[in-house]
Length: 120
Length: 174
Image (cartoon, rainbow over all chains, first blue to last red; front, side, top):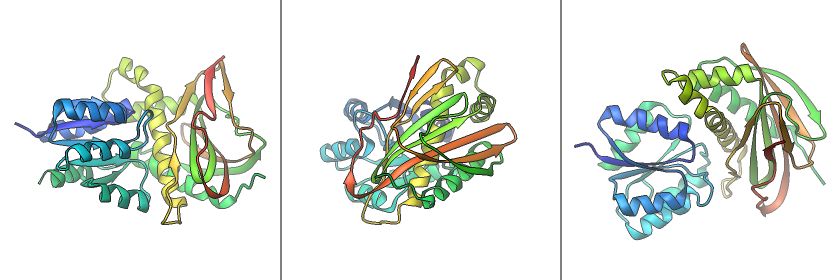
C-alpha cells in the first residue's frame, strides 16, 4: 500500500495539483485541509505518513501548524509547499523540523523527489 | 509619508513573466509603467494581495476576462467546464499568490527578515466595488497574446517590522 499523505493548502487548485501528481506515483491521499487548524486536527485524526503544507493560509498559517504537529509528534514528516521562498523562512522551517521546502510553481519531479526523500 | 520605489517593480515583472510562462506556456511581454493615485483595477478580474514586513501595502492584479479564462483553461486542462467554473477564482488567486510569493523572494535582500503576504481577495465581473487602501501605486502593464495583465504596486518601506491589517483591500459585490 502507498504511503499516506495529508495535503494542506487553502487553494483547491493547488491541492488538486499535488494530488494529481502524487496519486499516480503510488501515494495515497488520506485527507485534505484548507488551513492550519484543520491540518493539526486531521493530522491527529489520520496519522498520515507525510504532510504537504502550504504556508500562507487564513485562521492559522502552515508554519504554526507545522510547529504544533512537530511538538506533539517530533517524527512527523512535513514538506512545506509554498510560494514564499525567502531564505530566512526556509531556515526557520528546517529548524522547526520540517523535512523539505518546495517553492511554487514546482515541477512534478521536484515534489515527488521531496516527498520520497522525506519518507526515507 | 508614502515612498514608492521603482526598485520594487522589477521583482514583480520578473516573477509574473516567469510564473505565467512556466505554468501555462503563455508568453508574457513587458508593457508600460505608469502611476495611479490609487491601485484601482482596470479589467474584469481582480486579485488583491497584501504584503507586510519591512515593506507594507498591497498588490492589485487586474486582468482581462478572456485572458483569465485562457489561464484557467490551460491550468485545468482535462477538467470539465463545471469544474473549471467552480475553481475559476481559486485558480487565479493561486497564480497571483505564486507571483507575489516569488516576487517577495526576489525583493527580500535582508536575510534576517521575512516578508509575508496575505491570502488573496479575488473577484470577477462588472457589478463590483473595490475597497482599496488609498495609496498611490506604480502600475505595470504586461502583454500576452490573449489580453493584458496590470499589476498595481502600492507598497511603502517601513523602518521597523509592522503588520498591516490583512483585511485591507477587500473586494465585495456591489
